[in-house]
Length: 307
Ligand code: OGA
Ligand code: MN
Image (cartoon, rainbow, N blue to C red; front, top):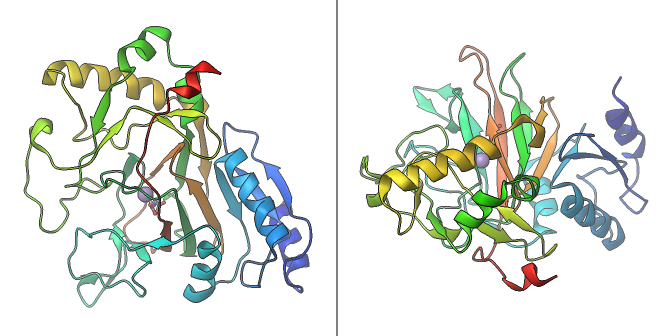
């Protein structure tokens, strides 16, 4: 039973000038896009349908693709300028292109070839510790382990819509600092100090409620739980409020999980979805290439409340 892949294969003989088919996952977010071959040129009408589906479903999956880095980057560039890869925990990781981040547990000649290893990666928004954060990321699978290493996504519009009124009031107008010193696997990035007090950590400050510049909907914007700090609050109050926000945001009803096959490309909207990754057996291999679309500074637009 693999309709999306079958449909993709059928369409792979021609360039992308047809109508794309969007098949929602049925969960809180995510959809399969079928009928496109991302290695081939794509006309504007096809691109526009994909962009609209991305805004509507937050996470898109394209199965059965056969990409090399240049075709992967060419597709990603339709969505905007690409950001350079972030600083790695392992300084000797060499990415094949400046805009590609290798995500892998593979070690060659004693050196990791990529990031995030094989452990759990906690819920996060990519690179939100920067002043301007990517609007989205694309992740393409080259090798997948036989089990584990699934990637979860969650819908932060829904998390905000369903937030109890009292919590909504508590976070109105508040901002949060997003720790830049550690990655989603909890590793200290190269060149950063090991600081334990969240008030002392480096990183950008962003509103807790974020307006999506294209859909104009608001989303809860948390970044990562470890190292987060709500500006202006005593530490214990910040921790308590963050714990209550995360207990809500990490509910299964907002999630959808991707179980990877080789040739899957997933793209997500960092402005309204978070993601995490399950651990997997370190004796197995997982290799993904990621790129990220440059964004602007996250903001909250009070005019969205008037509507
Ligand atoms: C990423 C990421 C998780 C995964 O690429 O930004 O968090 O499943 N990856 O590899
Ligand atoms: Mn990530």
